[in-house]
Every structure is written in structure tokens, then in C-alpha cells.
Length: 180
Image 1 (cartoon, rainbow, N blue to C red):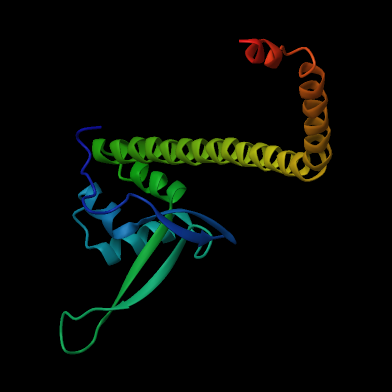
Image 2 (spheres, rainbow, N blue to C red):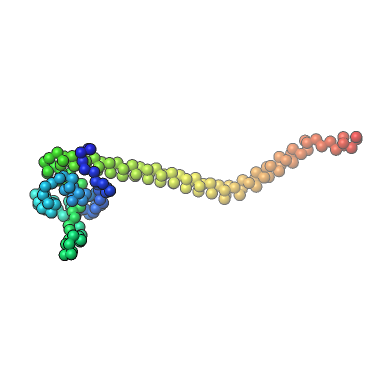
């Protein structure tokens, strides 16, 4: 994987809505650079879309952006493509770089899935802990409000009875002190 050009200061994926679902996407211009294609980007992407019969809003979306390259206010078209399309385009190059790109995105997609699954597991565990704490606090509150009001007076009454019971058996020798 070391041979793959790293995408610096960017994540390899962009969230994009394709085919009515939010999924992971890749900027096709970045892919074109990574594949080191000799063709200009616009010709390359249009040719690949036609060759493979990729469908807009299913395999890719187009973003029109104004570019300040000249005073004419030209518009640049960015293509955000699905990970599946990215892997397909990598294989279409029929070179080592294309195979590396395909493998890279397969691995990155798997890492993204594992991260998502790991987060879902952690969210589930934390939700269960919060629910348990909520139940415990609810029971403690119920105990304090109901049982506490009944138990405390009963315990105080029992304590008073024990103190009264213990008092007669305590030896207060007042008479002995008076004899001296």
C-alpha cells in the first residue's frame, strides 16, 4: 500500500447521496491524479462514463463550480463517484497503479465499515448503561420517597424501644456515691 499516493489534508471519502442513499464517494479528479492518467481529466471521465455506461445520480453526481482561472468566470465540473465506480475505474486503467487504487479503496471501505460498526456497538453499550443507571436512580428515588418515609420512622421507633429496654439494665449507682 505504500506505493499509493496519499491524499493529503483530505479524507479519502466524501458523503454523497447516490441512488437515494447516503454513501461514500470519491472525488474523480483526485482519482484521475492518483491513476496518473495522461489524458486530461474532462476527456478521461466523460470517456469512462460512456464506455462503462455509468449513470448520473446512481454511480456519480456532478458539481458545477465557478473557477477563478480567468476573468471569464469559467465553470469547473467536479464528479463525485461511488466507491464501486472508483474501484471499477481503477481496474479499467489496466496497470499496476489501477490495481493498487482498487485494493486501496477496498481496504478503506472496509475500515470505514469497521469504524461504523464499532461506533454502533459502543453506542449500544453506552445506551444500555444509561438505561441501567436510569432504572437504578428511578428505583432509588422510589425507595427514598415511599420506603424512606415508612422505614425511617419504624427504625427510629425500634431504636427508641431498644434504648428504653437497655436503660433499666444500666447500673447507675447513685446510692453508692451518696454513701461515701
